[in-house]
Image (tube, rainbow over all chains, first blue to last red; front, side, top):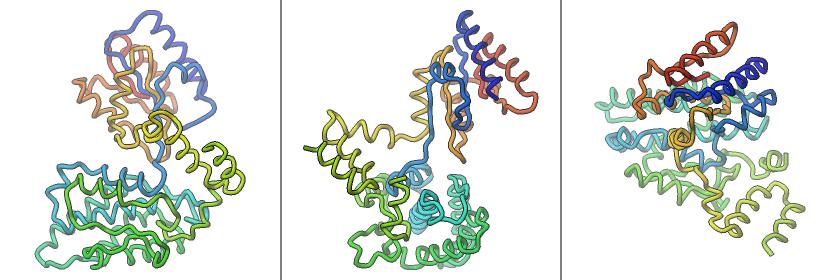
Length: 230
Length: 118
């Protein structure tokens, strides 16, 4: 790769000397690597799409992934589940930064999992709307075993995921239950809000979501010492 | 004083230094809030769009990717919003022998004013 990049750099210099057609744009993408020629980097506008840090940023990123239009005409129940799904997504992603304390392996959870989970949940809810009951078990299976669970290959990680979903996705969710697990008496709270408009949800995340703490992911506060000092 | 506080935090709670620095910048720098929050509220497409406005024929846009990120969709969306025909956006995944293809497309893009994504 470095060889090609050097060639590319030369080529760009030639282009610059000749002057390109005005519409010409070059987009490059690569992993972060030390072998990228400095000259090329200096020329370019660098964009990183760093995963956001912390519960609040992650919640926001996950939630804003859904467009306002598609969100607004959803059933209130679906809105609530979608919000909890964003939280679940955040937990799955953020536990990775704790190293082996979070997951036994590095899993490539991505926004694609969130998108597909939301899609499947939506379809499933709509086709089951007539029965009036929310098929929690089916949803948990789809999300925890198939979508996110599809990445998981360690039995203990799987146990965690299922247990976490059991705690999160149940009828209590519709009564504004607490999202963070096992935090009684810890002086921190983040409740599932009542169904609302898109903006209100974002406002809610902005105002009510506590600062980042391992408690949000069901972990001990000391779990973060490792990566904050590393 | 805020700086001395940082020193104490650094010694006693190194795990808290990033948070402390964040707060320090917010309080001490003029418009510190804006600096710290930066573009955290805009989505990737908005960021890309503003980068596009800064780009020229001579400044490529370089995506440094983290696992799972895929800018192709965003670039195609950008092309649509800029009324660039998708036929004029060439995407080449580099690998075995693709460097020749890429160079060809670069020449085409250079002459015709197309977009090239590598």
